[in-house]
Image (cartoon, rainbow, N blue to C red; front, side, top):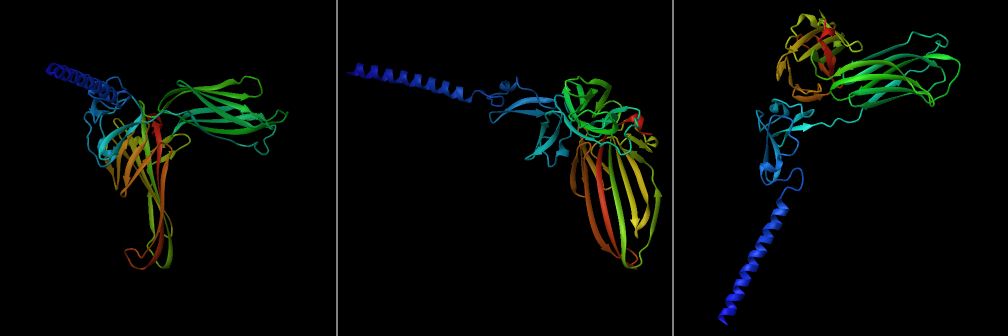
Length: 375
């Protein structure tokens, strides 16, 4: 009887051990990495795509996390996370729950905005010399063309990206006729930063294949010999309600920017050797408040930096800028602008009357400009 009890006990122990092994096996199978982010040790994360900054993989709470070296682990705003960035992906720093995180931005499909002017009145039969211009723009690539084509056309524009080649195709979805007309075409293509070969084809009709009429190599985003230009424009206009108010006159206009030609005049007097950006400030007076313009260019050599009452916090690889203006954090991609308009009544420093002042502020990211166009 005792031997039967011993045999039964031995069997139960063996069975318990087997169950324990099975349980451990099942537990390990449940906790082993079965996705790209689950882990038991840091070695389970080595095959993942590394993050956007120098560092290493760590296993925290069974999840793979990329730990950046040289970047603060704690933050209050994204500007606290400035550090050495990798070109593994285009992106930006975020401050999430007090910790710095690098967020990669996906390179989406080509974004296209275009306008085809109608058949210009009085131009039928008058043919202008054809011309196509291809250049980098604030947010990508800009194509402008003077097109002489049949006056009954309905012209559409299509853009496709094949690797680093951008193909622009003009297509007539209307009809054909004998009269000729002039059309102004203005197209903007938004692409990720990089160097692109742009080809323009026109005009496709029916099954006829279009012919290439222009091509150009264009650099978009940060590159050798390119400087970001951000501008703040303030317009203050006054209207006297009663009494008198001192009239001001200002003349100190030191620069001018042509957004179509991408030329910044007045920048030749500042040192651009190590500059990464230029911040322009322009103030204009009007109405009963005064008349005139005061403007100035400020070169930016390092970040963050204070420019008057503004503070530039960061500049991303694609030219997106983050700045602090009067306790307001503003983030602008190339081609974007921020604006605000306020109105107030004041008696001024002399207490001689009441004037209503309307202040319009615009902060615009003009994107990157070729150094050769800063004169």
